[in-house]
Amino acid sequence: MGSGASLIDNQPLAARIIEATKKGAGNLPVSVKTRIGVKQVVTENWVRFLLEQDLAALTVHGRTAAQLSLVPADWREIQKAVEVRNQMKSSTLIIGNGDVESRSQAELLVKECGVDGVMIGRGVLSNPWVFEKQSRDHTKQEKLQILLEHVRLYEDTWQGAKPFINLRKYFKIYAKGFRGAGELREELMKMTDIKQVEELIASE
Ligand SMILES: Cc1cc2nc3c(=O)[nH]c(=O)nc-3n(C[C@H](O)[C@H](O)[C@H](O)COP(=O)(O)O)c2cc1C
Image (cartoon, rainbow, N blue to C red):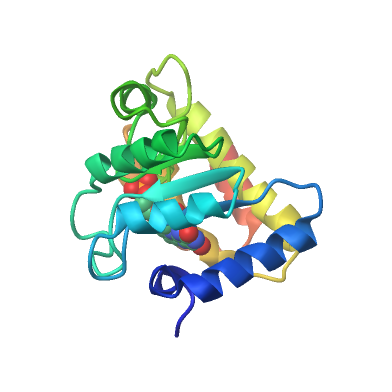
């Protein structure tokens, strides 16, 4: 209670958290990622307050907390954040976030809304190559190799501290868009360790 997006309605506490973070970070740049309101859209007032905290970057997700991900992100509000930043002559970078599914869409939004950058979340879960400059189709082997890399990185990172089955939800990102992908997905969902995944992929 009171954390995350709720801080939008509690500027004094948000200011204290940002100040403490900056103090702890020393010379490291500090950025904030935020939605545009809790229940009501309050972009202008909230962004102005955040920019007064002198941040290196501010990422704006164009939805209120109450909206969850149920409505399209409002990029006009993100553009408004850029306008506030420009009016204030602030040097904080503004990064837009919400519903971006391709690099070309991101580039268009940079042009249209004046953001300094774009953050992509779920887009990478449907296309792991979403950041590539020249988008192209990827072969089954490329998809399976990157699946393997994901599994290995997970194992290296967590070293058993997190269960292997947490990975299952990611298999569909890679095992799709080629003949036999559905069957392979079914097989992958039965896997209980990395060795089984390696063997399965080697047999494909
Ligand atoms: C699985 C998942 C986990 C997320 N975790 C966080 C988080 O820890 N902190 C955060 O600020 N946003 C988190 N988000 C929200 C995203 O960063 C992003 O703001 C939101 O998904 C909208 O962007 P998108 O349309 O590009 O996905 C998460 C989203 C997803 C789908």
